[in-house]
Length: 93
Image (cartoon, rainbow, N blue to C red; front, side, top):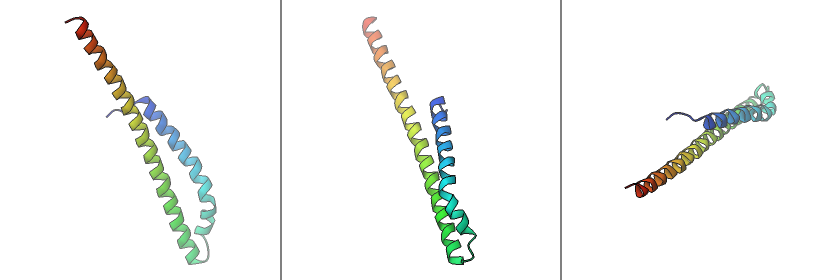
């Protein structure tokens, strides 16, 4: 399925939002990754991994929502075209 400009713009906006949010949340964890305490470093790694997975999943959800919106707009346009064609057939049998 080709990507509409609307979907592409939403994808870009979502990616930019994701990258700006990600750097803010990882700053405290980054210091803990280098901790001398192995338990702290391991837990920081888990926190970082889960934070990354959540951010990726949110990006996927935003992308899929944009696709759904685009499909709904296409459906609405197609339905309007169908109604127009049916009205034209009625007017010109």
